View 1 (tube, protein in one colour):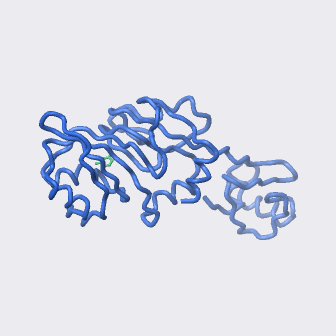
View 2: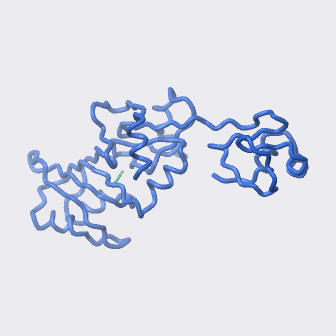
View 3: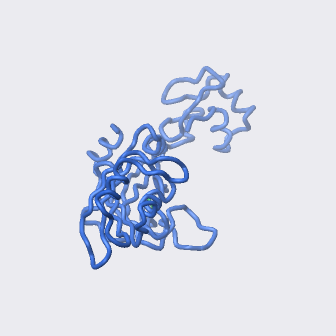
Length: 237
Ligand code: URA
């Protein structure tokens, strides 16, 4: 996030904003090694090094990127007014604070990406990037080929038509079935509403993949840090 440099100096407890402006005009403040000349200079405390009289006042937080296999029965927010368990409890061993990218419902399990990289979070959540998300959905009954085609082409929900999706009937279990559904949107309860709309309400929902990332060998409740290669690929999306 970009902020005015005098605000950052004031927050570091070194000077008031007015005094910080004076420090800047006296040439005592540097930004990544260069003397700051303009009062309104914008800085990003995630990346930039700011020094006053040669003393570092901010240290960019190291970036962390991980995927968590969220179990059912956890919320993906950082706190819950109803006191339900949050995924933060599963991430206590992570150094620094990471935040979920997007959300999964309380009763949905599966892959959730967590990071403190605000730029990446913003980009991945922007509708124009259309990151594919793959779900396994156990639904009541067995959808007909026509019903599956409806899901593929787009189906009318109360907030508009869904974009085309990839949908496959994977397996039948007694009278019910498992579908593999890949969507590019991230509307609230989207998969559940899609299968409900064709008359096959959800029984269980699991997110298996996000972009090129999959759960792999992760067990429910476990997380792993992404590799340098995976981080690079995510940033290229
Ligand atoms: N779609 C849903 O309905 N729920 C989720 O948690 C994710 C996608």
